Image 1 (cartoon, one colour):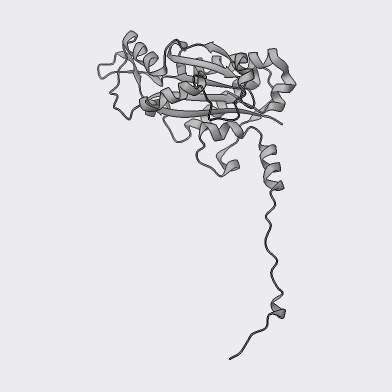
Image 2 (cartoon, rainbow, N blue to C red):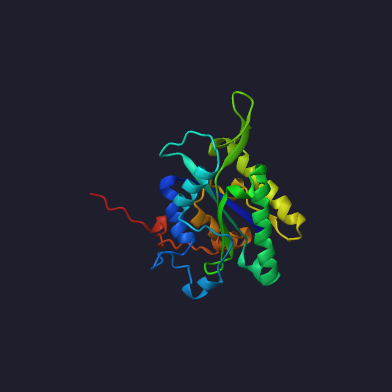
Length: 237
């Protein structure tokens, strides 16, 4: 069985452009050997950024009256990666794969009333392992100021408030994608992986729990031969 996978990564201003170089395929020589340049033309945008991520963010801040005190180490964007395993995409075919990512996009537009205007970019990669979508958004919360007025502010801490915020994300995402007719299991719990945090690069590779178990089961540890303790002779002085 294949899994519905969503992964979130919080990014500072210093980190976002590096993601843009990868997501927009701007590097002349890819350090990621999983990328097949002959297939890059198959990648497509659901929402395309015209500028670099930081310039898009600066433009976004100028056009929207957003509150929040941003420091050099503040989280200004989040990157979500949506995917499953290759078997799932092979099974559903090209058109359903497009519908799948469109539904992923709609899901995050509505998640916590985020709104499409707060999404900077959404690009689907078909040239790197299993199909997946990178979605960049500004973590905006709709709240009230001290005077009781409705305001929008950038605050990753409040957007992901609560120790179980990612579990709630997984639950909501799975319920949405399942309701749209995609035959998937819920993504892996932390308890399944014994890991509290994965980078996006690591997580993209973990697309099927059964495959992961198979790989682990096939790992063979070769140990050197040890002598029988009864055959060991002790030299006495």
